[in-house]
Structures are given as structure tokens and as C-alpha cells.
Image (cartoon, rainbow, N blue to C red; front, side, top):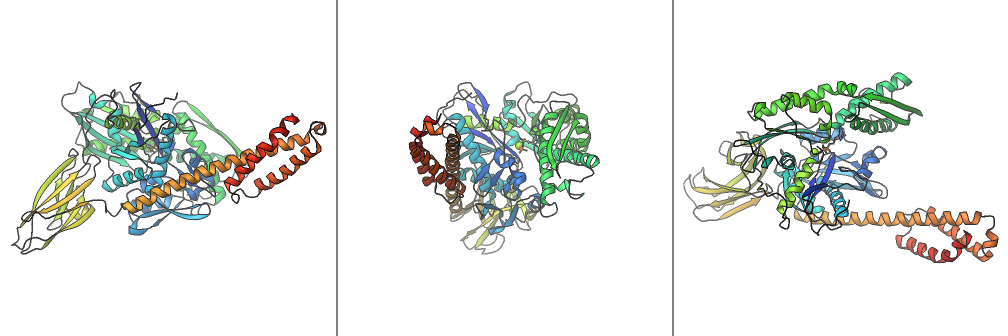
Length: 637
Ligand code: ADP
Ligand code: MG
């Protein structure tokens, strides 16, 4: 059901680690529509792949991953806004089949081969490609250009990660109206901010079990203000782990039945994606194929009690078919499911709440579709009804779409609500003795502006170094450093001379810090754009240009493929015509000669690697062919 909307609809995009989703508020029907992609799927893999002749994004990229592991990039959300030397980045790199190296300023660079050339990509750039895909999906559905978007991020994302996400949007040609916390978006999808019947605050627990990550957040809503009370999670617990368990199970079964071990080596399965020589090509290919089928089987086990799998020639020409039931699947993952419940408990402890204080439990993430997970969670909350009427892998995009509509002035029917987010972490500066002096405490509503007065510590101090940190630790250097700047030109004075430091955070959680010398009014400031993890505006400009180039190349590739296909089609028709017994009666000998020579020319053209031939030349041939054959071919029918 397509619906042409007025131009410039604002969309909501859930840019996920493994899958992304885009949604739009439909003014006409006063509801949110989740937009399906060209494959008819409502979520799109956050995958980008590069080949000898094209770039692929989404399902097309994921589908060819097993054949092209080194050049298929995924999981970039784990890299965005981080440094190469970050220990979590170092750990993740070990699991990825694609290469990541350290670039300028300790920035992680993803290395791929595209059209036989090595390319170095920023995480922002890869994310922007996924966002571009999501934008195109929305544009196709809405039949109009899409510019404005609300993009969601995990609640624990810090300043650098949020800014890098905005940059990815800019490179994708989007105006990111707001970056929004994923759990907040999910709560909005359920309209929990508007529910009454609760005295004062309403506490919500968002349980987000996705493809590779598990996040629990406890939010409280009071007067439409959302506060993140606590977050907890495991960055490596999710759908992929359940897939791996099933892969393991079937590898054992294959071994039992056929006396062949397809895993290559015994420890390979837990490091399935590791492809640095430990698992040779043939093993990893079989495992990847098995894994794809297992993911499908896992999904169907959420609805059915048994699932069958079938793979032709899985390994050494041996076909494999088998089945698995829900009980077995649950048994093999029970420890992981229990781990999820432990994390829920620890999140409640962090928030200093008893489970009875939770008013709503919201299910988010594709893996929360698993019935056992739902049951464990419901039991934990003593039989409480869970919020699960919205598809869990769509709830975040759903809420983002509502928020996008709220931010667009021309939308009237969307239920009014004033949404406010809060700072996820405390922000402050370091003072004498490496002490963290908090200027904006965590959970402060944004936008916000706070000013604090500080004193010089030495006589005739001529400047002050302002070092900005984010975090909850008492010692400033234990927190994460966001940037520094100098306020110079203090008037000569004994120690204790005052200056003001002002922190201001805009709607997107972007921080600007300024310092003003009290006696002279002289000011210095920093918007944390020169942050070590942030791209400069020149770099972004360059990347926007590159993104456009990529798109042109993609289009050219499609044009090329179409021309080739059409030419191929003509050869087929012409050859068939020549094969007809009565061809001599239908065509003159000159016409037959024309067909023969054309077949020869076109065959050569098509066979001679299409890369060499300019697309215009090919299309010219095609047009010429159409004219020549227009009269001849119909006569042969
Ligand atoms: P992300 O973690 O990137 O935000 P999603 O929330 O969309 O992504 O979760 C993706 C995960 O959900 C994948 O591992 C997928 O296999 C899993 N999943 C999707 N549908 C189902 C289902 N019906 N049953 C079990 N798992 C599912
Ligand atoms: Mg998600």
C-alpha cells in the first residue's frame, strides 16, 4: 500500500548494530507506518559490501557475505565514535573478517577492496551508507525526497558516539533533527508518556535483546520528561549467540552422521567470524551457510514448535537435512537467557528499585520475540503483562517516527507531547588534585545551560587550562576526556581570582563549554567538535562528495548491467531466429547475414569484459540494434 505524502516527510531511523529500520508518521491515518525495503523486509541488515564491480547495502550485502567476507562490513556501530586503541575495539577486531587499522589520530579505519582498489573507510562513512539505504527505502515508499530524520542511539552512547552518528547522517545527506535514546523511543512508541493512573513518576524497564547486544534501561517519566535511571547490558549477547549455539549443535550432528568435522578445528565455532587463517575457506564457507540457515530456523522457532533445515552439498558434496524443536533450542541457550535475567536484576539494583516499582516492561529487539525469553521475563515480574503489541525490532523506529513528526511543524494529528531527554553522564572539569568538578550532573534535562565559578590557584596565574570530562568517577582522569582549551589573559592577581565556566547542551546532547574571565569579560570556548574522535568539517565535506560518487557509480553499474542484460536478450532472440527451419522463407539472405554479423559483434561486446566498454557505447549499440532488428525480428515469429 503506497501512499504519496507531501514532500519532506520526516522519518525515524533505528540505526542498529545488526539490523536497521525506518518508519514514518502518516498524517492521513494518524499512525506510524514501518517501511519495508525492496526485498519486502521491514528491517534491513546494517551491512555494506564491496565487490569487483559494485557496492551493495542491506540484504544484498548480507546475502553475499559468506562469499566475500573480507569486503563485507557490519557491526560498525561498535566502532563509531571510538578510538582504535579502545580495548573494546581491539577485542571486536579479533572477531571480524574485515580489516581495521589505526588511522590518523588513532581513528579506526576499515579496509576494503572495491573495484580492485584498496579503500579506507571511516566508521561514519559506512554508517552513512546504511543511512543512505534507509533514506532511499523511505523515498521509494513516500515517492518524495526525504531530508529530515530522527536517528536513535543506545542510551549509554557518549558525546563522541552521538556526534559521530550525526556526522554519518550529514554524509548521507540527511538533516538529523535529533539523536534520540533507543529506550526512550520504544517507550514513546507505546505512548507510555501519556498513560495515566500513576501517581507522580512512571517507571519503565526496556528490555532490548537484539542481534549482537543486550541492553536493559530503566527510565522514569514524569510530566513528559524522560530520565534514564540506569542502564546495564552485555555488548556481546544477542541473536548471533543463539545462532552460534545452533550451528554448534548441527556441526556435532553432521559429524555423527557423516564422520566429517565441518568446523575445521574444534575451537572454531565460537569464533565463527574469525577468518584470519584459522578457519580455511572451505570450512568457513560451510559454517557460514549453516549459520544463515540456523538464523532462519531460530526465527521460525519463535512461532512454530519445530523447524527443519536443509542444505545441499554442505561439505564435501554431502547434503544435510535435519530438524530441531523449540525445547532443544531453549535448552541449548538457557544459560544465555538466564544471564539476561541477571542483568535485569543488576539494572534494578543500580536504579535502587525493587521490581514491584516497575510500571511497564517494554520488549525491544528481534531476539525478544523468543517465547522462552518472554516467559522468563514475565515470571521475573510476577506475571506482569509485557508491552509487546508493537513488533520488538520495529518499536525503536516507531518511536523515532513519532518524534520526527513532533519536530516537523506541518504535522497536526500527532498526539502532542513535550519530550525531553536527559544527559546520560555527568559533565564537568578537572580541578586541583585531579578532582572531577561536576557542572552538569547526569540526568539533567536537556537543553541545559549551567555556569560555575572557579578560582585561580596561583598568584599571577596568566591562564587556566580547562579540561572537560564525562563520567561519574571522583578522579577526573578516571572519566572520559572530551576536550580541553585554554582561557588566557587573566589579569595579574593573587590566587583566588575568579572566572566562570559555562556548560551548555543543546537538544541533541551536543556540548559547548565556554570560560569567561570575570574581570575583563574575555571569553574562550569550545564546542567539542575538535574532539579527537570527530571528523573535521572539511573531512565531512569530502565524504559527502565521495558518498555522491559512490551513488553515481552504483547507478552506473545498474545501467551497465541493464544494457548488458538487454544485449544478451537480443543475442538470445537472434540465435533462436536463426535456428528456425523456415528462416529462409521468412527472411531475405541479406537479412539473415545482418543477424549473423550482429550476433557476432554483440557476442564479442558482451563477452569482452563489460568493464572495458563505456556504458554510452553499449547503450548506443543497444539503440542501433533496436532499430535494425525492429523490422527483421518480428518477421521470424
Ligand atoms: P539490532 O540488535 O541490530 O538492533 P534487531 O533488534 O533487529 O537488531 O535484532 C536482530 C536479531 O533479532 C537477529 O539476531 C535476528 O535473528 C533476531 N530475530 C529476528 N526475528 C526473530 C524471531 N522471530 N525470533 C528470534 N529471533 C529473531
Ligand atoms: Mg536495536
